[in-house]
Image (cartoon, rainbow, N blue to C red; front, side):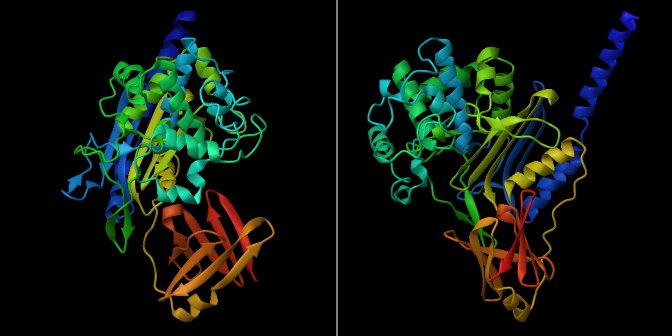
Length: 438
C-alpha cells in the first residue's frame, strides 16, 4: 500500500509538471503580437518553471538609431526592482556579521534627520520616515545630470522627515539610495563590484549590471513614448541618481533566474529569507506581495523614464515571471494579468483597440468638473479639437479614446471612464468610483 502511494504521488507530480509546461504559448504569443501591432507595448517577457525557462518573447524596438529590434539579449532599466538586489546584498552583509538590522543609520550618515533613531530594518522596510526626494519638484532640475554621493546625501539630509521612524510605512527611494551607500561603506567596494561578486557572477547573470549615464551597448534598450503613432525618445535619468534604489539593468530571463535563486536559498539562508519576506504594512525587505487570484506571489515592480518592469515569484507554483517594457500606450500591469491568465488557464479576452468617432455635441455634454465624497480629487473633463481629456486635481491631463457612446479609455494607465447622466464612473485595477458633475 505504501509503495502504491509513492508511485501515485510521483505520477501526480509528473502530470503537474507537464501541465505547467503545456500552457497555451500560442495564445500568449498572440497577445504580445497584438500589443506590438497596435503600437501599444514594446519589451520582453520570460517565464521560468522550477529552474527551466519555458517561455521567452521579445516584441518591438530596442533602439531607433540605428533601428534595433528587441532580441533575446535585450537589456532594460528595471527601476525599483533594483531594491531587491540591494536588499539581498544588505542581508548577505548581515549574515557575514558586517551589519545588523539594528545598526543605526547614524553609524554611517549622521547628517540625515533622525539618523540616531533609524535602523537598517527601518530602511529596508520603508519605515524610516525619510522623505522621498524623487517626489520633489526640484528633482526635475537635476535627475539627468551626474550626481556625487555627497550631493544626493545633502538633498536627502535637507528634507524634513515625513514621520517618526518605525511608526508607519511609506515608500521612499531615499531608503535604498542610502542602503546602496551603506553597502559600499561596509565592504570598501563600490556597488557595481558588490553586485558582480555577490549576485551576478555566482548566478551567471550575463545581462545584469549597474547602469551608467548613457549605456552605449547595442543590447541596451532605450525607452520611448508614443505620440500620434510615432515613437519619441524619453528623457534619460543619470544612473548616479537612483543608485541602489533603481540603477540596475537586466533582462526578464536574468530576473527570473535571480528570483528563483533567491527563493531557493542560493543567495541568503532560509531564516534570512523569512525575515526578508515578512510583510509589515504591505512591505517586506525590498519585496512585497504580488498575488494573482488565488496564487500568492512576492516580488517588485519598477519604473524609470519610459521603462516599466515587473518581477514575481509564486512559491507554491515554482513559477518566476518577469516583464520589461520600454514603451507603453497600454498599462503593462494589464499585459501581466493577460500573461498570468493564459499561463494558469484562466478565462481571458484580448483587449480591443477599435475606437469609434463621436460627434462634438455628445462629447461637449460630458465636459465639466466631477467630484465624489469618497475621493479627495476632482476630475475635470475638457474638449479640445474633438477629443476629450480628463485631469485630476494637481495632475496632468490625459486623453480619452471612445469605444462606444459612453465608454472611454486611457490604455496607458488602464483607466476606463463610463459616462452617464451627469455622472462618470472611473474603472481602474478592479476599483469602480462613481463621480457626479458639479
